Image (cartoon, rainbow over all chains, first blue to last red; front, side, top):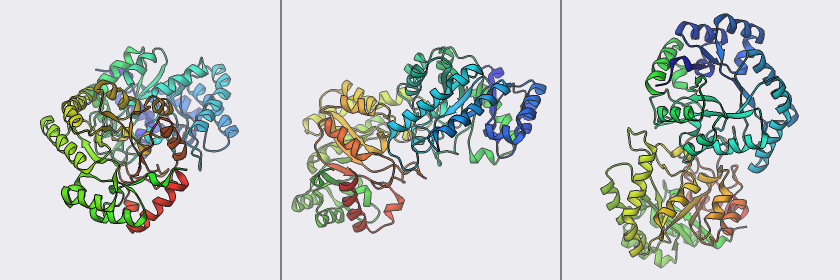
Length: 269
Length: 269
């Protein structure tokens, strides 16, 4: 059983109904000690206001979602935007900046070039991140996102990028993205000391959408307790974010969502 | 450019409009020398009748789709059914039986057990397959199918299963299932002499369905010519099946589909 004190609310889980302020109040009301905000939610609420509200509520920030997205437009613009994301993460006192790297550039079939471009972007902001003491958490996304969201698709690949980049870079492990991987246990063993974030949700057997049909823990097929054990064993003892992008759950009352995920966190993770 | 003589029609590509007889006639009419039938199409048409029609039309059978499916019901029934599939493949003179292994059993979260069960089933039919001179082509499916269709999800994993099983077993490489894999080139190099089938279609950037939204070659993001080169380099010089499970293409005139895939095969593969 995961320690309930590790529970963190990723704001995307209730993003259709609550702004950042409502998320902070919701966490306080439900006794959740951590939050993982998205940048757009922070921007809409105001960075300074967010910092004050978080401090007043006594909430820790498990990570800021998200930097990266190196392949969509110009690399120079992506680098500038990632420097801003690093500054925001520092202001929020976030434990890391979660990096989603981006898919193939529109019109391209060159995976190797897209992957090289991500590494180039990461290398370009690394000094800025180190100076700000913001760790970059490379998040491998599920291979079904390879075309349009993330050319980084396995934990082994993320660890290889960490090796290339050196200090200040680690990985974000999300159950939804890695559960299928035959090399998962081996990769987690090799991730010792390099896990910066751990996100959980479930994979539904009858998944209907490639992006917005994630499941509540316990409703799907992922052995979350086993995965949490492997992540623990790799030396990660930080907060565990619940991130459920789901049209099904966005349609529910957010207080019900928080009550459910708290209960399921204890029962399933 | 792939040799047009290698083109094979997987019957699923036009399954909503044509029975097996119509597929055979369609291949003859369009100058396609190979066909990859599905078992249900063979059963509906009649095995003996299919064998005669294929012989009269002078068509080669690139592979029979599909054996496997070890995890859905009882293992004993799956073993019996796979023996029948092997006999059908032998009767058809198919170059291999394509094996799709199945997902997690309903209600299970135990991936390791499901994978062990597939290996147990494969081992149980291997003598039968060897005696019938039918090679078993293990097909890793895309990780998004891991819950409900295939716990075998990477080429590296398929090659490891081949190592365990020994003679008479190889792999089926399908562009749709493997294109995202960071280890693809390395795995294909290790597959030297073990590729029994090669299937092509494309991954659409705006994929809307996890099963029935595959793309026509050239309409998506896969560098098929590069992949074909890697597969060639691994020593595979057999037929190349076009297998497009797509509600979009099922809605079109099958003769138009065949004309298009012939043209795209030459242009893109």
